[in-house]
Length: 488
Image (tube, rainbow, N blue to C red; front, side):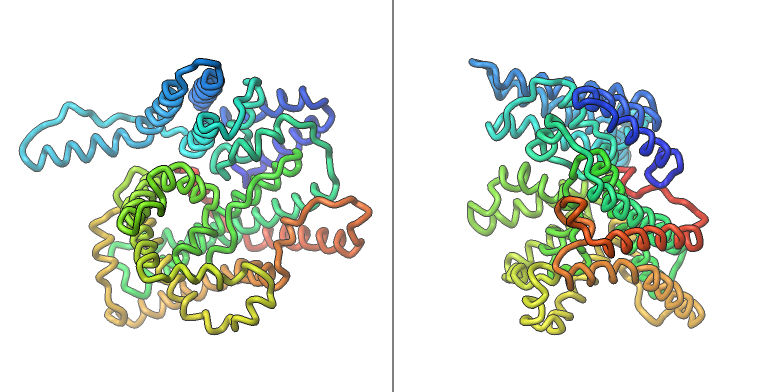
């Protein structure tokens, strides 16, 4: 049951109707059951692992708060059990395969077999979400939840279970514990957000993905064809992942929850650091708070700071997948941030397009920032090549291609595919620039009373949803692709 399927639409509507007819306590039990039904729909045994993780972390956090408890021991139990499960299901075959190759190169055999392991969908996301809870309880920043039901709903809440956002307990758990009231204005805004997410997924991401998949399946693409495919993949992954987040946030709003914003127009970034303040915000902030800062952050001099940055980004790359290309991708971005830190390019923080008022951007004369923006955009897409090309041998070939060396017909074909991808990206650019111009995203406004909403706003919302669904019927890709981040 994926977010862009009719099964999910029916599931969400049924859950919403029943949910708002129940009292608060029953609402939480019902949502918990619905969340496990949603997860078990993918594969029933996934629920066993999710439930085991939930119980262990809930119990460990409770024991930490017991007077005289050996708190570190319970933290180690939580960390060890979560990381052991994640390591086995996601990284065992990667480790065993590399050990086999290394030993075979010197004529030795290894007793480590390659196993047929089914990777549980979303394990990287809910593991990190649950770990942040036990770490915060250990640090004394958060009281332990006495209710297993409420904690289980925090970990397994179905809109964000499979691919985030990775929520913090300080934000989501109180909302689980409090009574919630239906708000018609929020529900309408949520519908716009869901429609926008479906539009991005089915019209933009899947069509761009067809181009990217076709190019990366070629045995010997030329320079122009390859980079048209990379650009298409850059459009695909942003539209795809942000679409999932929008549908997740819209679904949660229908149920009275407000999930965190996971993207802030990352392709408007003016530096690599600015990109990571805008891209997958819940993950980048998680690594900042639970890895980079505990390693020492920037408190122990420049060399230690640079080492901490590189370590954090290499681990972040490995989080995305058990493959060397993800390690290279993380290391590449870490190196970019190291260079930025050394040369002082982090001063771009105060000149970031889309942050602050429109007047601020005008005073800075945004056109002067175009070279900086273009350089960042190109570097990010070099990174996307590392991310997309899973065969490292092909990767070195791709990076050595020279423009103008392929046949003219192939160069023109590459230009044609680039123009198609650019056309597909126009709604994304329009949305980003609209947000910059108005200083806020329309679908992220605070909740207000129904009487405070102008009639023209309601009409605009109805028209916007109608146009997006009509466009879906006409322009949606005939080939439906899975969400990219489902594999992580």
